[in-house]
Image (cartoon, rainbow, N blue to C red; front, side, top):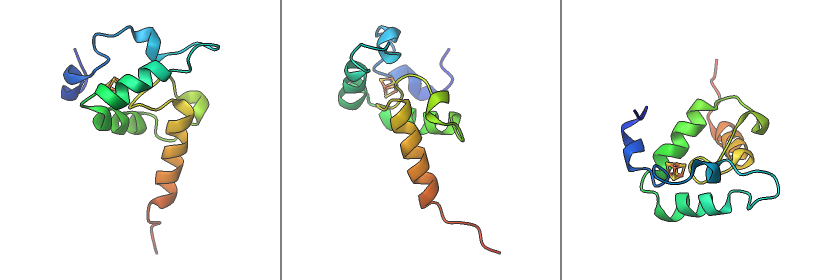
Length: 90
Ligand code: SF4
């Protein structure tokens, strides 16, 4: 059962899951990213969930393609978003 309601609309729901966990020497997840970015109606929700699930992790502790981005891309995005957050005062 999906953890989130939006997962039932995921473009990867009926695809080969191995494509979302590319091995070294493969396409680097390019095929999966294309499906995420061009065909998935819940890409934004998926990416937001990934960033929330992986909060505080470095790229090595993030796995697979989620929300159209690979582990390093998500780590960079999380770092940029964190840097853009207003800092608490007082
Ligand atoms: S964005 Fe990609 S990984 Fe996320 S639900 Fe859609 S197809 Fe699956």
